[in-house]
Length: 399
Image (tube, rainbow, N blue to C red):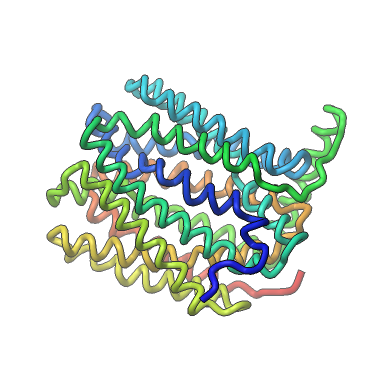
């Protein structure tokens, strides 16, 4: 099977190269739960830390998305990556809760700049240059990203074993600087708007208002966003905040978390192949529902995982199905959005994810402290059920 179509690499090589290189250095997420617990934070405090970027993103998500629509997606993405890289470097030098919380707040702001804008950048480029590449882009993107994360887990295990857990922060910062450097060469097929400052703010307000009204009244997007928010709760309870303490309770050594990261990345790399084989164009919603049902069934088996082998099986298989839905989900989302609102509506999605994430992360940390990680993970499967019901109720109509 031919991996790339004619002229695909000529057009998209910076995006694919970024997806291959920068994730290789980004193994911090699998280690920072253990890192923060070792420096004295409770799981509830860790949940609060994870909620802070969502809270800050909630404030800035739509304005920064509108800025990208008005002034260009590339500028917004590059600035966000640069600021994120600087913030992650700073975490190497601070370990008290309030300083770390402040840095996480800054990360939350920086993350809003590429949120929505990066996908809009690529989608508009493909729309104007080669529409037929749009359907498979997200599958390939996830495959390359997952391949890079396989390498990053092994690399992370080596570095943590040799230098200790604090090494995760400067290396994570470097990953964003790599992304910044590579994407400098990305083509942007978008006409920036030149306006006075007063006129700019007026347009920001109007762009945001139009996008909000459009999303609310749209027969698909409203329910899509509602299902997405529910799945954020499920994913928070099924996240590292639950799994890492559960696996360490079963005897997993801390630097072995890097190998686990690689195994998860391999799983998420294989998942898009499953999507590409079984997902039919125009049937994305049905595929999303199927993947969620299978993920629920496997997650329920966590109650019977009394050793590392069974725990790994539940984690990897449930992750496989949960991630198999993502290419279908992103394709489904973008086919209902007009180009002129793409980044702003993408940022509305990010804003709603932030709202859910604020409460979901705190709830996950609280539940791990109160009922333990195993039952926290079990409850995540219950949260997926309403999302399935919402997807089944969607009545698709043409724009």
